Length: 507
Image (tube, rainbow, N blue to C red; front, side, top):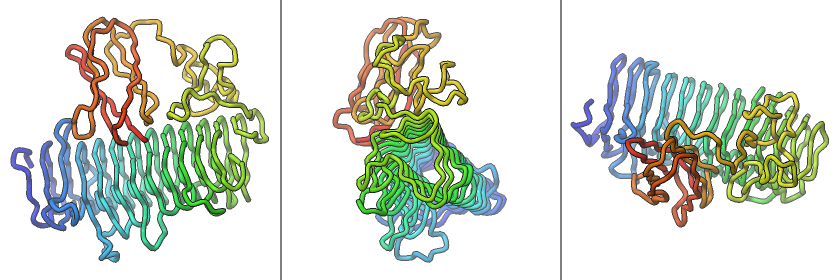
């Protein structure tokens, strides 16, 4: 389906028939005029592959009515969506018994599909699960996507995975909601039931569940949860950052779980950062859990016969409204070693000392050492204080405590000694950020350089650098000012070289 024929005004259901193939090229625009759907049938293939400058769009002419979403039923294994925008899918409250009530944006059943660099926004299933994406009995790969402002009645406002094998990597999952008028909501950002999931390198920010699992709800599944930012999520009952139950052998490593809040203060609201129940052999390693709020267990709540091992974690600055515990445990076996826990905790190698973050209120949880390499009071007590049998940090020193290790090759405020070999736009920190973030770039030779910041619609919202720069490594602090919460892009242009990275602003 070539791009130069569109836009397409869709006036009926679309279907890729059994054993057929449809290829949609970059730039196609599908405008659903009424409440129609797009079905990919048994053994059929859909390849909708846009590019960074020319997306494929699936939307509704009447956003109040919406359309019925993309639906894969036992499709062929080579289906894929890339650089697509899927918005205004809608499954209304008036028909809660509709057999396809799950997955307002994309619904995947008994299929193998890859979704990359797509945007899912404003999709709603009022009485189902999976506002942005729903998958059951499938193998799904969700990489580098944005899921924002999606809504699911019973859970998985952004993503719901059930009895599936899921790879969820490098996504931005922002401001999604799980809410149904009769209650029963699970997981506003990501919900996983049964099956197994790898959930790595995601920004899970500002999601709201009216029951449990503001950021994530994980149940009866095998989970790897690594290198995620889980911040500013809320839950009405518990597990504002994440809720995990019946998850054997789950490993949560190098996550930052911060500023999540259980919003209704009563004794049943548990686990501002994480609420764990009925899980065996669950491991929390090298996480930073800071500034979360709940009635009990501001940092972690553990109950219902769980067995949890905590190693090399920082659990600090969390608020328990009914007691002062950073960790609240009942009917659980909790082993804690080489952790930094405010007010202390028994166990080998544990400390109770201010971790000395760079700027915790601004979201920068790097460990400080202002006078590196001088051993003085500016050195965080968490540096080189992790378990001696843990893997060494990337700088080949003993493991630090917390999610972000201190680089003793360079030091966070020092210039690398050698000139860079190529122009590079380095990742900003913190990311997500609140108002201000540090952007870094490298110049192998002196020359003019321009850095500009754009919003999701491609509008330039800032140009913090436009000048001649010497060779070397450079950094500057960008202040987002009055810009709204959301995803932005910053781009470097130096000669013929350009590169773009994503940043997330959270206020």
